[in-house]
Length: 138
Image 1: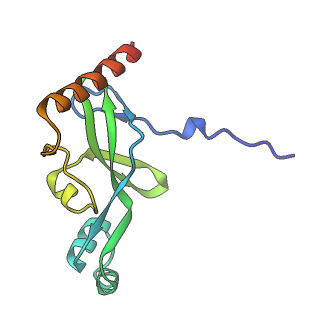
Image 2: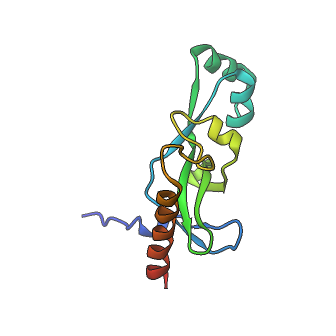
């Protein structure tokens, strides 16, 4: 019988761009990025112009190798990171920019407050989340 190897040691760790502390995935859904024109596809996906034109002719191209995901740093709180899958299944993380958010589908930008939520409710929701993580991070 062939022994199965554990995939636990293959889990990649991510680090905060500000303090270099370890960040934890918050368990949110992945917001995949999409591109409209051939030049955007070529620039962001890294394929030839001919292939990019062919993909653009089909319509919007959703990149399954780039997405925005929610992470948590114990010092800086909630951070949205753009994750890109490179060769050999290595993941590269960087802070998500406003342009990245504009290239996702059905998402709300996190830096714009929801007008239907009161200021008190918003403040209390942020305070409770950080208390929880501070309590269990030590």
